[in-house]
Image (cartoon, rainbow, N blue to C red; front, top):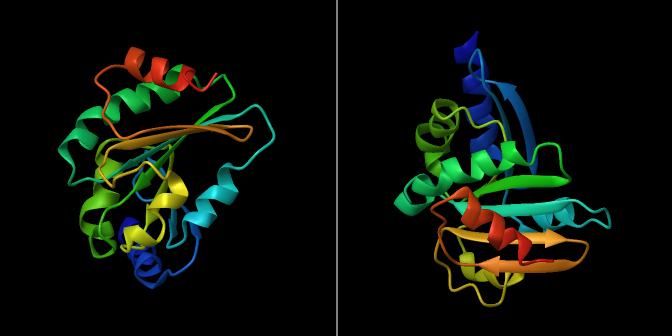
Length: 171
């Protein structure tokens, strides 16, 4: 049954051109929450809120060593803040044709159950300024949003404390 579910997910990934939510059990113990989109506006709609929720949005890829190195800090941060109005969203910039071979296995192997968006629009210049005009295009990069305020950094983190300090800069 797992192979059929994984095949269905892979087929959906291959055919997506707009936001698609996929909440599927692809292993016995990890539920992957994956949204595939080619429009940054879909992510903006998801994170625009007048509530007091703080969105920590990390742009990363499985082929990016600094991104993979800092991932445990983001996951620990999410766990630490799970009882607070804080939401981690991981935005994968993995190549669309590598979702099945790289992205999904990485999420499974690392037990990542946080919300993951897969940006399939590889024309970064078409949307990168919409994330932040100062973004030069390097990853990892992190955007923090709350009630219309934004704080952006094109950098990596090497501790939860460092990530906490970065998020608190929004205050």
